[in-house]
Amino acid sequence: MKGLTYDSGALIAAERSERKMWALHKRALDRGVRPVVPAGVLAEVYRSARQVNLSRLLAGCGLDPMEETAARAAGALLGKCAINPGAVDASVAERALRRRDAVVSGNADHLRALADGVSRKLDIITV
Image 1 (cartoon, rainbow, N blue to C red):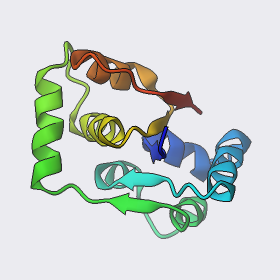
Image 2: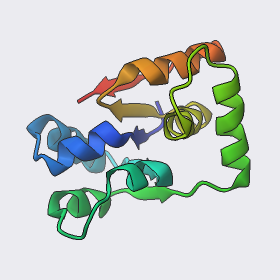
Image 3: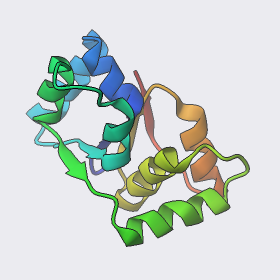
Image 4: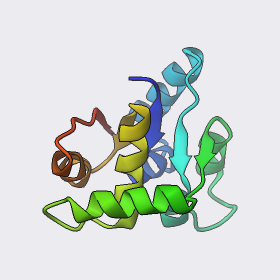
């Protein structure tokens, strides 16, 4: 594992002040790992500037933009998946597979199905 990619479940857990998520985030930062949040994940979770815990978490993260190459790669991953988990999950899985990141998520099923579609293993940490 090179790094961490946060899925929507990770951001929601942080916003809800879940200790497991905050402990995981602190360990990552203490080890010099700066977690990444794909832009689509942020769009799924962000609602207002009043999400103080979310803002605090994001301060320690990098934002992964969705440019054309990444969008095409996520779409190709969707095309090889037996189910249709959606574009945001595909972007999370594609980014994590490409960079060999573990994914912090609240729902591993869709991410595993995407990785299975290309015969790859994805490390998933459930929060």
